[in-house]
Amino acid sequence: MTEIRDTVILGSGCAGLTAAIYTGRAGLKPLVLEGHEPGGQLSITTLVENFPGWPEGIHGPELIDNMKKQATRFDAAFQLAHLNSVDLGARPIKLQTSVGEIHTRTLIVASGASARWLGLPSEQALIGHGVSSCATCDGFFFRGKDIAVVGGGDSAMEEALFLTRFASKVTVLHRRENFRASKIMLERAIAHPNVELRTNTVVQEVLGVDEKDVHGLKLKDVKTGVECELAVKGLFLGIGHEPNAKMFTGQMDLDEDGYIKTAGNVLTTQNGVVIPGVFACGDVQDRRYRQAITAAGSGCMAALEAEKYLEAVGH
Ligand code: NAP
Image (tube, rainbow, N blue to C red; front, side, top):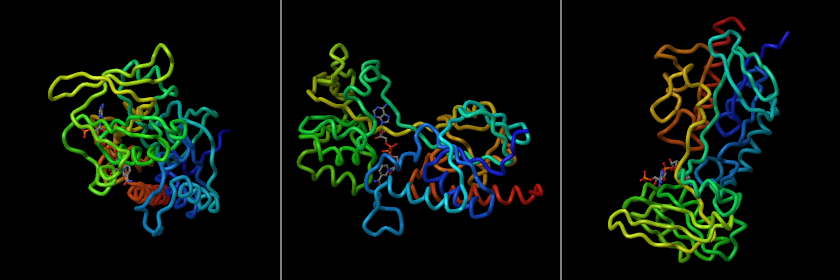
């Protein structure tokens, strides 16, 4: 007979690992399914300067590694696997995963969010050939080259500043006049001699599909309608993220952009009614704050709710 676990945690970013530390310490022996992007967004970021406790900052991968070690110390188990489908109506909850069927009394969804793309055919054709959504992964390949970053938020500014370590020039292309980025990040980008900010500009096409190598962008000024070309060897996307919750469609309330709707912080619902034993935390349910510390906080809340639920049903 298939073993019934007390807690399965979907996702191994900041929220999932915090939930693993808490449920592990509560003796629930959580199983963490690490998903497509183990470690989540922190594992591909650079210096995290705003996570309390590290006055000089800490690198995202190191922070994640520390959290994983901490969860392992409390008997959390890790499995490199992803979810194919789920039956949230069954008790125990049934998960069909890439490593087989798993049964669990509680499920903590911490599946995070993945990078968003512009959706241009030329962009999609050139992913891995000069188009990337991960500056820390791919920046190294652009040593001494001119590149562009799309976006007007903190991610775009962070990517642009990081890429100046390699690129000779980084042009940030933003579709509006005003930036969404925080003042401090925007000021750093403006002050950097190798960063140029271009507003009211959209990318219409990435050039280089035939050569399988980016050599430029076709741009349009949305105010004047004027089109031009920008010679760059790389394009990085910093335009936000999509929540990884599609697999719950029809079984859980999602908002219009696909984020999990939660009641009482981390309780999931279906048609407004709480789904017992199923909790959501981190970026998959947070469209407002999306910070490492808020993800950790909601991971803690989900774990405490899972514990309370198991106690109430007598486990
Ligand atoms: P974001 O704040 O949602 O910004 C996304 C940017 O991409 C916006 O400027 C948006 O333009 C633009 N955009 C979206 N779709 C686009 C499209 N199809 N074409 C062109 N442009 C598009 O996302 P984020 O920058 O990833 O930040 C998310 C959260 O993480 C924020 O709370 C941020 O503070 C945080 N964060 C913090 C740090 C840090 O403190 N070091 C680093 C990274 C992220 P519009 O402005 O026109 O909507």
